[in-house]
Length: 374
Image (cartoon, rainbow, N blue to C red; front, side, top):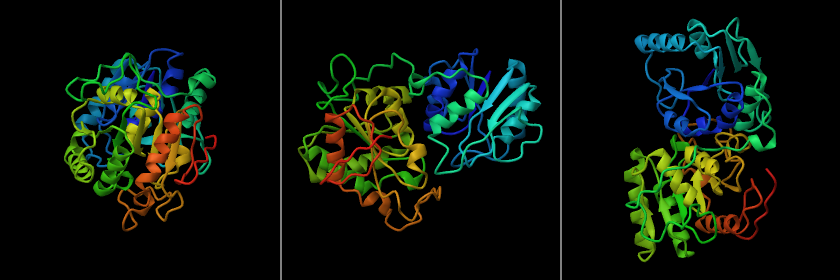
């Protein structure tokens, strides 16, 4: 069968439990966007990853390419998938992709759709509007079950990656920083700070990220700053500003120097990850590392916070930008995140690295840490 998720790497990772459930019915290919394909390669139970740059999805969607669209339909037709399950977020329509699947001759198509699907869907799943509807990962699994996948039970809902992960390249981290024997998920490991995000409204400012790096270093933490190739220059500025404040600190910049699989290995070796609501937050969850989530409320945390690992959400979840899905911050100064202090981040990291048994979704202050079950 064919699973479709035409979004970025984090969205693909959140679809992982649903794809594992579908794989109990038979072999599953994944159709992903160029920005999600590497995450698809990391998912267990994916037989093959196909790539299509859809003009109806993504931060900067391409123009309609008739030749590429015809080629996709021809490729899908040649693969003779019996079923297609199209995964989307609540505000997205699966119907353009459903039409292409029909043209490719796929006989059974399932998707979650609020729009009238006509004859395009055989299984039309419905999801409650926010604040209901469950977490994105749970909603994807619900669609898979509606399409006929067996219920994996409580143990089947966790995010996961293919293992073994590649070794962290020795050139990236100083000698002695990587723990012997694998994961560094304990109080003695380094902390990853990932300041960027796929859209600006969910990223940290350079100055704010630098204060966090310096604050973590002042608390005795070794800080590893990560980012994609497009974020390398800004991450270098973050490190330079942090070291200007704390010149004796150990702050290592590896932005733009890892593949997604190597980044997964770095996150796996970390004690904790400090990150916005973006793909590496879900990658950290998929390798089982606790997350301090600096969460811009342009989308609801109940749906998009890291899933299945100890997590503390920081940021004003009642800010004016709440639920706007804004890509550029609509409020001057980006206060929903910029008002989070370095001290709060240090306290959150300490809470997660000394008590990893409770999954938490909460806002905290330096005076009180009050976990609540997610």
